[in-house]
Image (cartoon, rainbow, N blue to C red; front, top):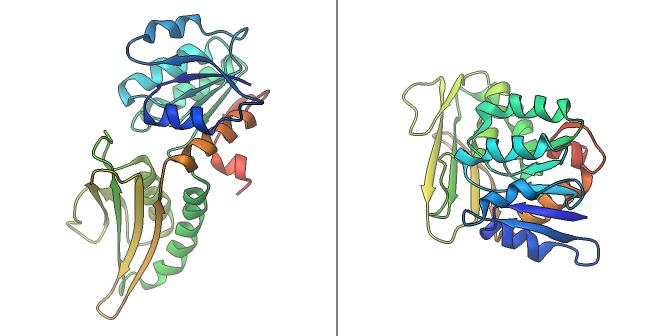
Length: 239
């Protein structure tokens, strides 16, 4: 598989290190310094593109590649207002788009546990107050994280007392608070907290490194070869 890395920062380098050198090679490594080279990427030199850049650049990068028929794996967050457009571009060009706010196997199992716990705890919403906390490294641009937003949206779908999430302490019972912290060197920690006067329930995922994210992105890149349409981690992991 010939991979174009769109974004060669910490995640791009982690993906490069995690690649199977017997089966994978890198056709391009695009950074802000050589971003014009994205025009040179085509189906003759590239099998799939993996995009980890900045929110303001993501849609432009993705759409340019999809229009060439190149399947794209995207891990950039905070651009999802344009995701429906990107999905349609993939369909129009008979190729595939794979998006996930988090490519870690553990996090995607965590998503499923969050839904199960939310369904149970909605019966006790008058006893337990729920909130979400996410902690990331100081270089992370968006807050809350894409993972925290997905956790919140899935929880709200199943929890009777919550109508929307807010990125601060809740002001009324219908709000789900997401507390964001930025601490140097933290790859990613997410916690769902149910607290009462009597006790507290915590469900957490703590990433020790970026290796899990890189491995998941590579799995997604292999998965979408030859496919058409839009895919997420639940499709890859058959959740």
